[in-house]
Structure formats: structure tokens, C-alpha cells
Length: 283
Image 1 (tube, rainbow, N blue to C red):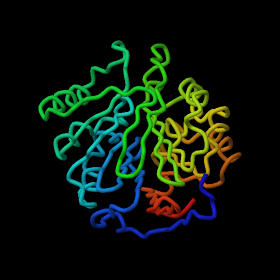
Image 2: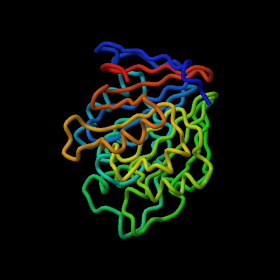
Image 3: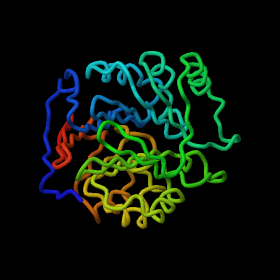
Image 4: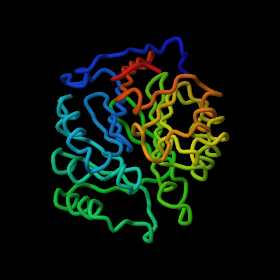
């Protein structure tokens, strides 16, 4: 497990988002501020992966962010689950970038949305002839020299809604590890905890924007995060993140980053040390 003393935190002033091409000799994980939604960029060894895209209204920001970092191709996109705050901008992303593969969870037919943005996503995927792959627990693939493992869903939660269909992925890079949890709630978290695949995580991107239905005690005990990241919108109508969740997380770490407070958050790992840059303030 990475020693906290090795984690260097930086505050980078406005304008830092408009950097040139990302170095290829490190792993970078960008928790992009898309308001009340999720969007994470992962790069390593010249390869790229996007996890979720945020709402449709955020596509201009996401596209500009990717382009400003010299990204023209996304080797993989993980669409954690078909809710608009995670997949709404997907049609635009597929239209504007070359995409190698889209990974999605198994979703019960009765839960597949009839929303215009999901239909547009399927049509654009077909038009561009992009490979669409259903995930399974234990699925492993690499991004550069980082190894990614799908940790959830462990099963189909037909009665638990789309949140518990969320694809969750662990990313290992030397001494650093990340766990990105979509909107996973207690049911899915308990299965992950029981799997033994999510112990000792350096950076946990909490499920469901810090909702009280996620980040349950049993899950946090297994994960034992050194750092937590919560993706949520400033002044959102849901009251995210929940005070209960913050209290539970603080039993394990006082380093909590939030996109509503810190803006976009970028972690860089060389396999030994981990650094963090924030758009605003620091955890």
C-alpha cells in the first residue's frame, strides 16, 4: 500500500487545464468536474480510457478538456451504467473522437432506458462500427503499464435498479491503486467487499456522488482508502455528499477531494509516488 507521506499535493492555478499532451511515462487519472455527474480520464503509455461522460450539457467541456491534452483517440470507454449523468454526452464523444471499444455492464432488458441520448448512443456506436463489449467480474485489461480489473457488477441486480448495475474498475499501477465505482450502492458494494478484489485501495472514487446509499461501512472497511474522491455538483439538489458518508470516510482518511469544492482533480503516478493537482484548493 502506498505510504501517505509519499503523496504530494499541489494547487494549480486556473489555466492549468489547458496543458499540452500528457506524458506517456506515467499513469494519470483525471476526475473531470462535470457538475452533478461523473467523467474520468485515464492515460498511461500513450493509451487512453474514459470512464463515463457526464450529462449531455457537459459535452463541450469534456471534449475541450480532451482536445487540450492532445487526445484524438480513446482506446476504451467504460459506460458504468445508463443514467444521463454518466452517459448523456456519449453520442457527442463517439462522434468527435476515434474510439476503440465501449465497455458496458449487463443490464436487464426492463431497465434499458428509452431516453433519446441512449438511443443516439446506440445509433452512433453502430454508425462508427465501434466494438461494444459486456463486462464480467474479473475481466482484466491493460492501459499502458497499468492493469485494470472489473470488480463489479458481480451479478445482475434486477430488483435493485440501474445504480447497482454499475461497472466498477480497479486500476493498479505499481504502489498506487484506484477504485472507481460508478453509482454502486450497498448491495453491489457488499459483493465487492466479499470478493476480496478491492482491499487496500490508495484512491477511492466513491459511489453515487457521496450519496448515503453508498460507501457503506463494510465496504469502506475492506477498501480502507488512503484518499477519497467525490464527484458532485456545487449546490446540487440531492444534498450530495451526505454528511453520513463524509463521517464514515473520515474513519479511514482525512484526505477527501470533491469536484464541487476542488474542481477537476488529477492524480499522477510513476509507480512509486503519487501526486495530486487540483483546480481549486486542496483536500
